[in-house]
Image (tube, rainbow, N blue to C red):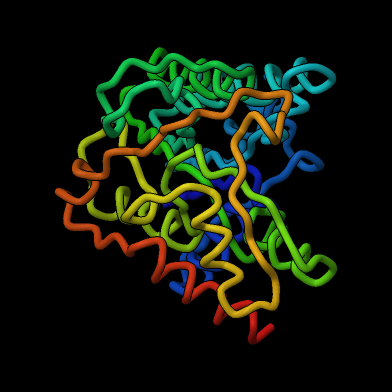
Length: 281
């Protein structure tokens, strides 16, 4: 099988590369400098030459606040146009595409967990573009996995865990919002499910993958800094204004993914393992 990874140098793409390397699985990894996914002619030529059977589409614009203004055009270009171009190219050669989406496709107003069948209603530009990306995948392809995730952290990129650890080095007190609830997701577990879906030939469609159990950002930060000499205090979102709307309650339903037999770790155990990994670096 010929495998292509877009965004191969990003947080998730790097995690996926290391996972495939550990299993001696060959692939091609691309990033913006060697394959511009927003250039339709370049993508068509690349697919014509390489003929991938499987595309792990990890490339994305993820600057959520910038997407509201100065990054709005790039958000649209990468997350919608780039995904459409890849989906069309994959369809032309009957390839399978794995697309990574987000809990931000939901408005966060639902009090219960969000199932794979709930109607998306994004309230920020990033969520809107990722949902439009989902629609492009579904429009052009029959062989696809859309995997929605949330609160991503991992070894190879900027994320909330690293931010908290860095701030703890210079602050004795930190304030973190306590009225936004979701599920943290370790990139290692996300990459494992991406490959599991393909290897096990799961039914095509939409899946949710995050770590099990839910929390708010304050609880997550408190767990990250449990052994640090820093006080974490809860505040409301109103006290911490951001350009982009953040869902207040975007807990993803994991039942469909659990039914496949894939083992999902709790976020507490995933965080513990992750902190042990980075402490060894």
